[in-house]
Image: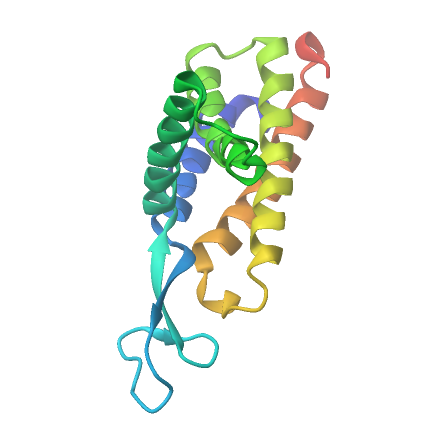
Amino acid sequence: MINQNISIIRVVVLLLLILALLGPWAFDQINVPAEYDCSPFIRLNGDFCGMPMSGIRFFQLWVGGFFYMLFELISGKFMGQGQEFLLVLAILPLLPFFTTLLLLWKKDARQLRTAHLIAWALALVLTSLFLIAQINDSVTGLWGVWFYILLAVGAIVIEYFAAKNNPASNI
């Protein structure tokens, strides 16, 4: 039954992925002394409030940082700043978006299905680590990341069973 409706399921997953990216993924910290109210933002720690930042905004900032790092690397000014090299990993949560689009276009490509499962698994691991890194902030308000993690688990299960039940493209 999954294989008969896999295209519809993938479209729904793609729409839910966009919804997860529209939700809050991080807080942009603003220094507001404790004696003042934070509204409409969320009090994080001590003198800091947080303005929720959507996943789309987060990835927009990533693209800017990535191209800045690439320019620094090409111009020879990049001097062992390893933490900035981690910006490359930030692309992983976006990979399932593109692999889903490719699977909607090329339905029964065995290698693409395998790559799609791997992309979801890598995205799930990185997004979970991203959430754990923010554990001291108010992570309950970051419903976009939570929704993405649940969606990734669901997508991995669905794609695994779809591949397992399809004798033409076993993983």
